[in-house]
Image (cartoon, rainbow, N blue to C red; front, top):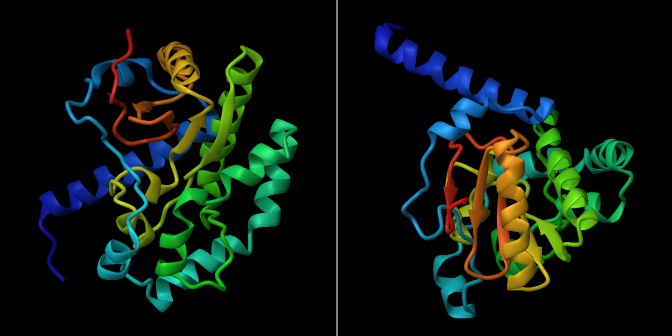
Length: 233
């Protein structure tokens, strides 16, 4: 088959970006210059998740194919291995279990996408992404040590079509490079955002999103290293 040079170059560039992102999650170090070069997104929310009404869910829910379910199950089989690694590196059982779980508020959409028998677990089958989740747990632990009240961690990996069904963006959670964190209230969310802005400047995460509720998006290895919802000071 004939391949144009531009297509080959584009493919190599995409592969390089993917490798760089995963390496960043692994090392918990990011190029400060590349982070600084990204601007604040004009979008109110560059990623989103919402729980539809029953009628919306029945009308718009896309069922996962057998191959998509197979990928989810291949990751679920690695749950014990992921938890062991996460707990070893963080010393936390509860946070590690939470990060491997989809948004508990979107359980209806989860069941619509898969089935009522499907285990409510999302573990990315590519183990190179695991450090993104583990790194996020470590940042949450740092926030708690500084007096921030965290309610729940969720949305590490959000595969398709579940991601589409909850209104999620295509380029972040489906790649397993980010985690969402919900805080006790707006005051804790705002305090956490200020601390995470400093952590981002220090190279501990690439992207930082501010949700309209009480949550934040921790883009540990997101390809787009920007902020959205609320800019960093």
